[in-house]
Length: 267
Ligand SMILES: [Cu+2]
Image (cartoon, rainbow, N blue to C red; front, top):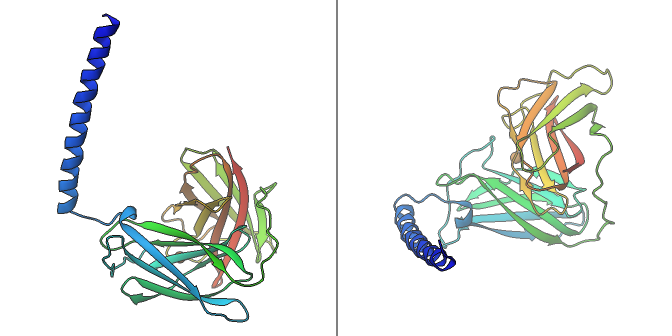
């Protein structure tokens, strides 16, 4: 076939494809109006921080609403709560996972004591009854004396003792773009024995939160179901790109929640 006829054929194919494309997107619009479920792009979060407690206590208010101006009233209970809020300092050295009170009309509020001033990442994780599970994030600036940033440096070994729990993490494979298993093995730091009396925390063996080193991306992590009470806890996630990540695992024992952070490099 000559170059010229190839060109004509290509042009014809492009015309046909673009024609089909516009028709099908028009059809999709029709469908979405009939059975509309709220997706992440349909929802906005408005954040307010106020209060001037001398000890850094502020009130965090987040209003979840539809971008088109409608209110969102109903949220499903997910891991025992209507909304999970992560509060993380910009250098990732400070981390809190808390549960604001629901006041109705999409308004959630909680007080939090910020240890220092500066930028914080706020992440709300929730599921509107009429929509998908989703999260909304914002950077906010908290007034007060700032602290020197702590570098986000990968740990030499993913093994750490916090509040009497010795926790060792295996990441398999430590690579981006693949399904990854996070396996925590937990022993009692005092006795060296395997911990078999973990308590369910928010309806699972534990909870894991992952952020990229710059705090820009928040990863979803799922605990495998039916894992009992230790000494091993397994979670699944997917790292979107190579880089440094901070991973916080939370377990409950004797009524206390223990938060175990690790920093690691993913290839
Ligand atoms: Cu939570």
